[in-house]
Length: 374
Image 1 (spheres, rainbow, N blue to C red):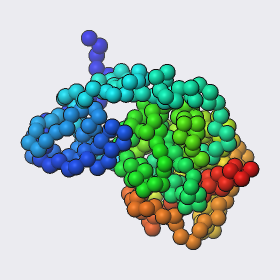
Image 2: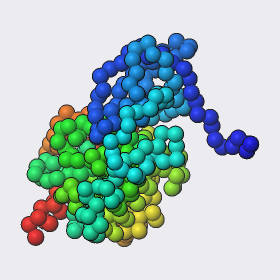
Image 3: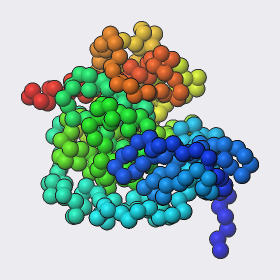
Image 4: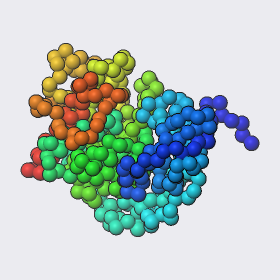
């Protein structure tokens, strides 16, 4: 038997008893997110999530097993417990043969948009190009609804599709803001790409997901972002923001218009995220092989604007990419009740972060109109 790896921690499991069950908050396809409060063996109450597509519903008083790894590590976004399924879910009605969460005990079949049994197979066989559709590639999940709200304000009739990558949370149902943005009409549809799961469409990878957004869902604007729970290690490339570079490369390769959100903050106390985050610098620098368009809000205070421009110049990003300073309306876009924070901060606490994401949405709408009117 092989020895345990010293660089692998244990999966931390504990017994618990369900003491409260709320109604499912959101349903995304057949994946329902159910919030629970469980009483652990030591009497501690913790919040837990039970994914009904992966296991059976539970009731008050029922014993369950929880994975509390994220709680023990005191993680932020992912700092909740998860119910370990003990009963099989209902038989799949997907009729598909593509496996997601593959080669794990929770692997399941989905009907991927590309596969032969999909009603969209013929379209996907012929799909080669995004035909100039603007593709906004985000560095953080929380930028996605801001981009969508700005684009929706400028282009109310546009079809806006969100492609979620598998660089962070895998179930789309984990994201309350994605479900809320869909319910509010900020986004028109969702596609989960790679090992991500639970969108209106399932795609084998991001390239196919982008093509499905255009040719199956008739997207006018596409937003690409990883799910909640970005990883950071304070190293140049060991973070989830690198997924932005991969998305920009894919958008350019497929004849889209790649637009990059800038991760800006003048409220973050960590030096590596002050001004232009090092996540943006590494993603837009060596990792991005395509020429992208950087969206910079034109309403930044002069000192902040100058600091961002200096970083962009010093890092060689102005030589590599195009930069458009986007005029901002007097009032921020209507989020239609969607509650968005970044690292726990609101728009009032970190206005540069919110403005930068909105600038990319306004810019995408501009390209949408140019393409439509050409």
